[in-house]
Length: 96
Image 1 (cartoon, helix red, strand yellow):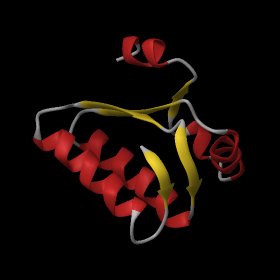
Image 2 (cartoon, one colour):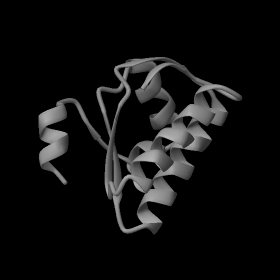
Image 3 (cartoon, one colour):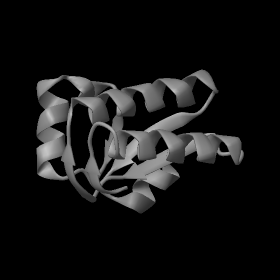
Image 4 (cartoon, rainbow, N blue to C red):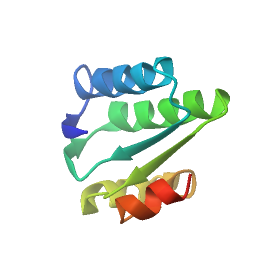
C-alpha cells in the first residue's frame, strides 16, 4: 500500500486489492503499510472489513511495517489486538 488510505480513494483501492488477491486464489494476505502516509476512519474501517472478509474465507490478513502514526491509531482504538503486526516482512510471511 502507498499514499493515503482515506475515504473515497485509498479505502476503495484497499478493498479492490484485497478482493483481487482473494479472487486470484490467495488465502493469506500481508499488507505492507510502510509507505502509507495517512489513514482516516474510513481507511481503518476498510482494514477491519478486509480482515473480516479474509477471515470469513478461511484466510488471514496481517500487517507489516506500520508507520508510527498508524501504530498509534491502532493502539488508541485497541485494534492492535485484532491484527497480527510485524516489523519484518520475512518474519511476517513465515508466520503464515
